[in-house]
Length: 268
Image (cartoon, rainbow, N blue to C red; front, side, top):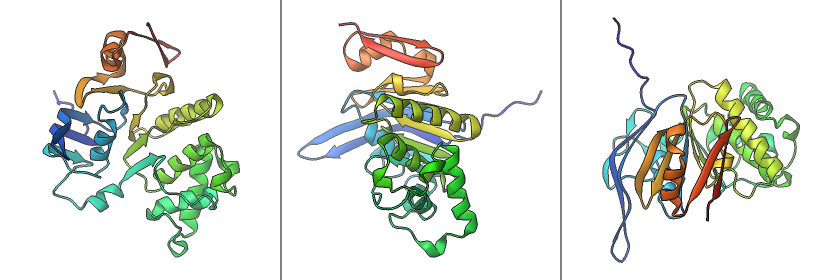
């Protein structure tokens, strides 16, 4: 009988710790083991200060671990050019610098070169058409010629996802993409991410969020952080439980799922 091998990990962290040296030595992350495989869609949750941003920066090849090993897309941090590796990872973050006077199509084009300003000589007809295709895929076709700064928060989030996909990454990191969105914009983004997961079978995603209501039905796994350590991780149904979320956020939490969507409320 032929043994079925699991696909190669997109992300593999082994006994990872991150120490921040300020006046003393603060342990930001400790004892983190985490494997993400192609086609998995992870939610990363935890209270403020739990270490979510640091963990995402590790996976995004922005910082090195103090202890342990981090492998991203088959390359080990410390043995690879971090800039080249970052170019192969899609990132969506409110902290990204994007010229507000550029059109949505231009913003997406800059994802092909990984630059803030467009490098027009680098964008041939195929690249420009790909940007249009991605905008249509994320439900933003009609926004192509609109100034980025004139778009709503939800529209900007979807445009930035298009930008991140221009490099055809195997890993997409979403750092609080729902932040400050109203309900219609949130639902548009949830639907877009759900379609993206269905249409790109091998794409792995990691979404940082504070709210389970923001998770698309396509979410397959979850990782809960508490005070820099793993509280629970694995298939989403076994992780997003009342007991786990109560410990994670330090108050009684009731959680449930309906038609693939999660909801939670405090029991206090």
